[in-house]
Image (cartoon, rainbow, N blue to C red):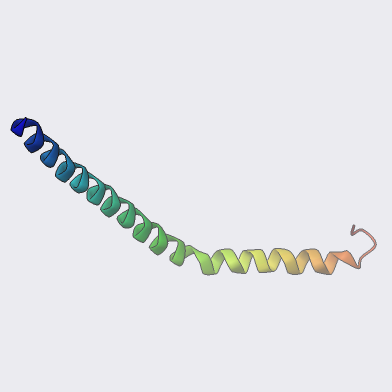
Length: 65
């Protein structure tokens, strides 16, 4: 019975370490993704803004929707 208790205690500790490692990996991926998005966002917003401006200027023209 004592051996089983020791095994269960070790298993709980192992689960905790596994969850902490997974959390660390997830946080790392999020940080790297955030840095990459931060680098490309200004260009993306400029492109979207130009598309909206172009579409809005075409609305009043006879060929527009």
